[in-house]
Image 1 (cartoon, rainbow, N blue to C red):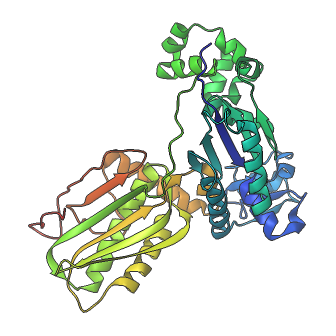
Image 2: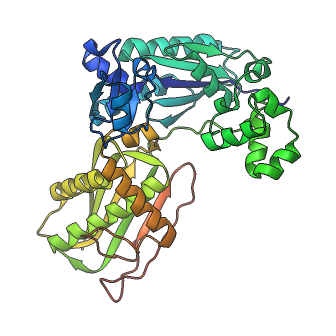
Image 3: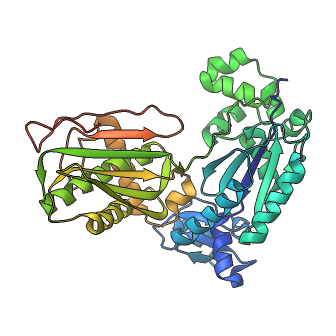
Length: 416
């Protein structure tokens, strides 16, 4: 068995949304609390362990959750509070950890390789966990092992509000008895397929030759073979607040037509929101940029609740532009940037309980992904064309996308 010699800490805030709601209202402690699913057409975002005993789980339709747990306390969700507490925990980790990755709004990885000779990784992790609990009041669990996959699995075993270290050399003993469903990213369909072959435990999966797994599952077969042996080389990606995506438009003719400028910003924000969802990210900082005819450039940014909602981001961008723009001046370029990006997750996408809006985005994104971003735009949209997009996400290459324009016959050359 090949196991890397790293030391990786995984931390996960327990039932994060529910825990925040309980901080706001301590009377919710010990009760079956369900965030989301308030209406029967809504969707459950998060639920307490008390509610899980009745079969409630995240992504469940609200109607089913109500029938399973009719006495449950259903709450609509509070994005501002969740964003606030997520930032608090992030700051505590950033002030302490040598290298960390914010995997989602409530999940973190820390690379502690080499720390044993100085502090002792388990002791350091325990002290960090206690510091987070003391300063935020939120329960948090952690797992410690030789890679991200095993650390995450250890955290799942440590929940709720616990901690677990897999001793070096004991990784296979930890893995073998577990059902294959416990392997991260092994979904329901893959699990069912393995079960049909009478592969139920990780030990039984480990007995399958890699050639057979590749023949049946292709590249996924290699992944299964590796993970059954505790092998995962995924690095801890250093969390940098400056990660961003941006898009801007240089006009062929300088303009102070406020309606045109607002429409242009509308389209740019909608396009960038699509990119954000395609990258599976949330943003918590929006910046609007305006360059006037004399090349003077101004910008204004605002910290927002973590979001991937086109509607919310468009409204926030419009407000920033209104505060920023000098209506007496001609505009040469307008742009928008989303920064402080983190990975999205199902719970946060669903917490707002707006099933129709979530389904609309999925449908729009599916059409754009298949036929191109210009094939479907919102009612106010115009095809700006000549759009320059920049991405700085997990080391991705920056790219420039040029499209045919329908608002000018001769687009001005892009600003450098």
